[in-house]
Amino acid sequence: MASAADSTADELSKLGINGEWTANAPPTLQKNLQLLSPDQVELAKMLVEMGQTHLFAHWADPGTDDDEKKAFFAQVAKLDQNYPGGLVSYIKNARELLADSKAGNNPFDGFTPSVPTGEILKFGDDNFLNFEEEGVKEARRAAFVLVAGGLGERLGYNGIKVALPAETTTGTCFLQHYIESILALQDASNKIAKDGCEKEIPFAIMTSDDTHTRTVQLLESNNYFGMKPSQVTLLKQEKVACLDDNDARLALDSNNKYKIQTKPHGHGDVHSLLYSSGVLNEWRDAGLKWVLFFQDTNGLLFKAIPASLGVSSSRQFHVNSLAVPRKAKEAIGGITRLTHADGRSMVINVEYNQLDPLLRASGYPDGDANCETGYSPFPGNINQLILELGPYIEELTKTGGAIKEFVNPKYKDASKTSFKSSTRLECMMQDYPKTLPPTARVGFTVMDTWLAYAPVKNNPEDAAKVPKGNPYHSATSGEMAIYRANSRILREAGAKVDDPATQVFNGQEVEVWPRIVWTPKWGLTFSQIKKKVGGSCSVSQRSTLVINGRDICVEDLNLDGALLVNSVNEAEVKVEGTVQNKGWVLESVDYKDTSAPEEIRIRGFRFNKVEQLERTYNKPGKFSLKP
Ligand code: UTP
View: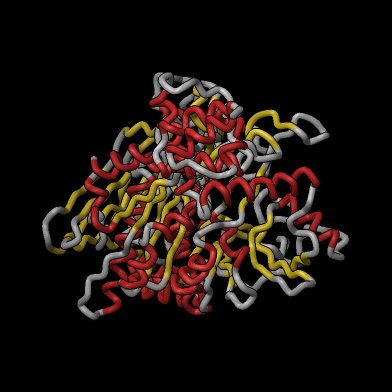
């Protein structure tokens, strides 16, 4: 007599669904296979073979929840498609990484750290100016990539981070500032080239479901901030499946048994997206040579970009990591060369908590210690990368865009057999060099922190708890860093800019410099700025200075108050003389004061615009602003 299993097998066989795997499929799945398309049956087979039968444990008989079952397979197909090598690779990789994590294996075992080669720049000296000039020249062969898919849980801002004002003197948001900086670089680069060819610098933005729609809205409602929409490419990253245990059993959503729980995979996705979308080949075919990656809330970055790109070009770096001086043990990853006895070698970011034990295990008894410069010889990684496009494409062709991943499960207890909540694999943009051959030219460029790095990552409450001396990385410190950088740059250019005052906002003590802001097309490089600041200028601490136009020359200006100058590209304006007024007064705003907009509350201050001198030149010609 035929068994029940035999008869199911017969029925499936009639549907063309054969193979041993069906015998291993749970009855709840077997009964439902008839609902599935051939592609979906293949996916079901893959899940069964990969030990994922628990996913079907709760499936109802055909006729009930059929739409949900189809939606389940639509989701599985998407998860399969979006991962290099599909879900099979994802599950295999997860098992290996989870086993390593359980065993406490150190991924850097057997590697010896040493200091890689790089360029340490001093703002404003001849070397810096030469690199800037080279960088501007190269910019028309560059593309920019902003990773902006992060949720920003630590900041806790309700909007997307790129919509936040970088500073509130002009209210310019991060995205506007980035786009205007790229356009300024494009103009400057085209001008130097003198070949009459107006090249456009492409700009790709990686979004996620958390940020995509609002990023598109921000761009569209502001005419792409002056960039041609055709210059902008949006690439949306997808989430990856969550894992319930060390066997990498996929986790089901607690609210929907026909849905796999998903979480973000990290900014490392940018590489596979650029590769699989074909964008990189388009850029190569258009004659581009460089790809510059940057993050969502660093208002200083573009001050460091021209010189860093110049370093990439002059030193022929395939990978150039932007870095800042790092105190030993400071909570920022160090750029490190790791060499293995078996010949493997790589230059990568090593997290600060891994660097110290690695050094101690490699014959450095003091571990992560400062050298004679007063800083660690391992520069601090700020996660902005410049890659040479040709070798980048070559490498991604080998790896399919996959980046070395990691897993960080929170275990219930020391037995490490179960997790407190589901986990997933993650990957980081800066781990790209991990798979490169030892011949790859991987280096770094160190810039002063005040010039290059002031991200906005922390909410006011957490920022106020940051141990003294460590950076707040808050909206307060991010904005104040812009005023500090601009004030210091004007000082270097010869102006007398008063020392800052110290004030506390949202529990954070910050230096308050004069609120000096300029549009990127006014001062993209230091040599440009030096040409536009002349004579003997002075700016008092309580002053506000907004330079919003390309050809504005500031000469013999004595400012004590607020001065705003706007001009169109065709107007040449000379600003001179004494400007004195009541100015814009900085007032504290309590974080908890919900009557103030969130953008203001999270920085803890606002400007009371008591009195100002504002002039706008919107016609071509030469003008003089002399009060
Ligand atoms: P952050 O470290 O600031 O992470 O990301 P986050 O996810 O935005 O914020 P938290 O950790 O939840 O507070 C660094 C950069 O990488 C992008 C972010 O948008 C930011 O520019 N990112 C992060 C992505 O594009 N995708 C991700 O999955 C994660």
